[in-house]
Length: 73
Image 1 (cartoon, rainbow, N blue to C red):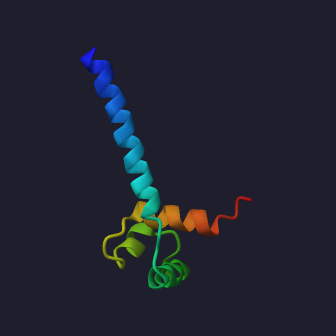
Image 2: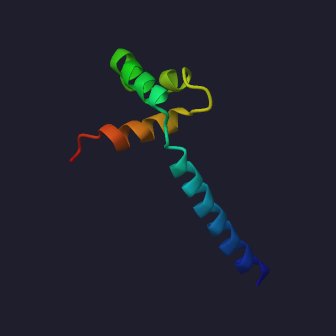
C-alpha cells in the first residue's frame, strides 16, 4: 500500500512543477523585446536566444514564442 501512496504524491509534485513552469512564462518587457530582436536575427535558435537572457532556458523561450506568436490558428 505504501507504493500507491507514493505514486499519488508523485502526481501532485508533477502538477506543482507544471504550474511553476507556467508561471515562469511571465517575461519582462525587456526580455520580450530582446526575444523578438534575436528571433528576427537568428530565427528559431532558441538556445542562442536563451544564452542572452540569464535564468531562461531554450525551452522556456520556445514555449513563450509559440504561445505568443503561433500562426497555427
